[in-house]
Length: 153
Length: 407
Image (cartoon, rainbow over all chains, first blue to last red; front, side, top):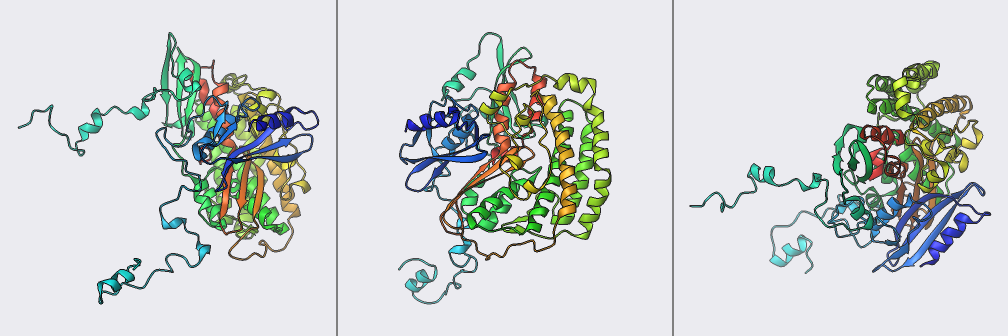
């Protein structure tokens, strides 16, 4: 993935491009791979440019740091590391930025699930409250009771 | 019978907590350094010491902890510690409906929340390919510019407050209160408006809003200028801010600054002109810039921007068309799969949202780019060499909002 650094250096330095303003740097977890997404802006073209470094492995995502061009990317890279575990090679301060230092997971990864029902989408069907099951029947065989509580038989 | 030494202490025993060293507020972290920079920062040379500011300190504008490395009264280096206000808004947004995203993003930039709810709406509209009615666009611009003025008025008071002057913030709050009451008449809320909707706005202009706006417009500029003459040429204020926290153009670009701190160095980057959105191409206004790049230039720039905002509001009121305020959209939104980047100019700089949709009713990824986060970063670059008291003036002139910094 060393090309990322070369690409960024070229579009930053090339006199025809001059994308000197880093509008954003963020990590993305597509569920199968990690990405680092850069948004740039140039006074020449007066438009945004999106650069996507895609296909980083989910087990050990690594990308070169762009702090040699934009020192201000340091915190953005720390944030992407904190939230996705993407390691930016060349960033001299790659610590967690939001979560406590002893925290172990990467919260914005797709396999980090929120534990409560509030995370369920109302669009998936009826809302959980509306879909409340019938009140449990307290008579009958133990198997019926288990079924009424929603356990699999 | 147990001796006091061997007695097992209950967790209810308050002395347990009194005796426990409060490591979280210790300047030196209780673990070995993890990065090159951390090792460098927490190694003290002869005569240096570490002190803590925050996490609860009036001049940090929120819950920010700063570890200062000082030599006498001079700052050698500093290490901001973030995350005390982290709520995981991006994760919450991924797990909520597109409409719910608006109210989750609302409290991020809580001084100017009209902007932080505008951006996700703009990103969703790009993904939905929906055209917003022109009247709604004008109302959005009107509400945003009013909110910009209230935020700037508060900034100018705050800067003086952090330098020890109490009076200007009272005048700042006077302006802000009039605007906030006006927006409350429009939106129903004073602080977190929840006014933007995907495809339009929540309510049309009403009589109370318009009459308050008319009253305010008749004296706004005069009031703001009057109250700011208190500090504009105040010798102490100017002496303490001029030449402080100076940053040049190249460094400003390298530090990813945006908004007033960037324009104070002479780069006319304003998203309203750099990549116009809404009805800004039709409106006539200037992008004020300054050359000095110091705290005083940033302060004066805010005053110029207030004048431009009043000019914009004046034009909006003359041009606003009749018509609907909401586009026709289904209740449950399922944008096309794709990626969208939307950015606007908030009072603190470029506020962006990068939204990815997978075709369901929830955003797949919603990245929130908050300008305060990027602007606050350069406090580490600007402060070394200055006095401890000056770090307040530098930080206040960068105008961070911790709700947005910590997300």
